[in-house]
Structures are given as structure tokens and as C-alpha cells.
Image (cartoon, rainbow, N blue to C red):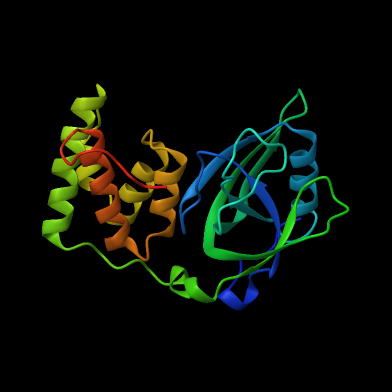
Length: 216
């Protein structure tokens, strides 16, 4: 079954299926590929595909606990690609729709967790992202170059230069080896310029240019 994507924030579910996953954030309009193999999350994907095709990504505060406490902010996404493997896994792509604040976790008869959420503080996620100022973009790229050198990594600079602001920031926020708390800071940034500033600061910290990170 294929449904039309939500047309407005009002179409987003107030009760969501929670997928707590450390080290993974879903940003508005970003695409997160997921390899689903745990039975409880296989059930979650089946239920999502049979109804609204939506799953809410959220980071746990303690990745070692079976039912950990969660960060307050996550993102509802829509399954936009789906396939099954011969060994019983699901390969899906989740496209970010809007961030939410966790209001209350709900008693659930499903093997996965569910919660009531509020999108009110993040309605601007639905609108196109504000572009970066030219100086901000240039500073981000310069910091990225130093960061990659420090990490012993490389990049396709033609692709970096040609990427739009939001695509570049979303990619860096999800693929750079930041801590869970640092990723959460990127997720919770108020908009694209703020996220670019946070990303630049994190890369400077990692490059030894601004002391040590103190994000919690």
C-alpha cells in the first residue's frame, strides 16, 4: 500500500512508533537508510507499512539499557523505500518530515514503544530551510577541510562545493563521527544557520581548534 505523503504539519501523527537508535538522527528532508533485523522493529515496520508508513526516530540516553530513557526531541519520518531480504531483514529509507517533543510514553501492547508527541515548536521544519550567508558557508567549508585532515579523511570537493546548504549540513551531521550528545545538539538546533554554526563548532573542537567539547 502506498499513501500520499503528509500535506501539512496537521497530517502528522500525534501518536508515533518509537525507534530509539543511538548515534542516528533524522533531520527534516534528510534520508536515513536503515537495516531492520530485530523482531520488535520488524513488527514496527510491518505495522507502519500497513498504515501511515511513519516511524519516529529518537536517540536513547543510555544505549546499554533494554528500555532506555530517551532524549526529548526526535523526528517523525516516512518510509520512502522498502525492500525485504532473503534472510528476513527489511531495508528501508526513512525521509525526515518534522521534529517533535516527546510528551508522554504510552502503554503499548506492541513489542515496540509508542509515545504521544507535539510538533508545535518545530512547525518551521515544514518550510524550506533558510539559506546560509556566503561567509557562513565559506567558513563551514574551510572548517570541514581542517576537520577532515585531522581525522585522516578525504572528501569529493566538487561534490561539497556543488551541494546545497541543507544537503551538505544534513550529510555531515549524520556521517561525521560525533558523539550521541553532539548529534543531538545538531538535531535540536533551531534552524539551518544555527545547525551550521553548531556543526562548525563541533568540527573545530575535533580538530583541536577550540578546546574540548562540553556538550551533554
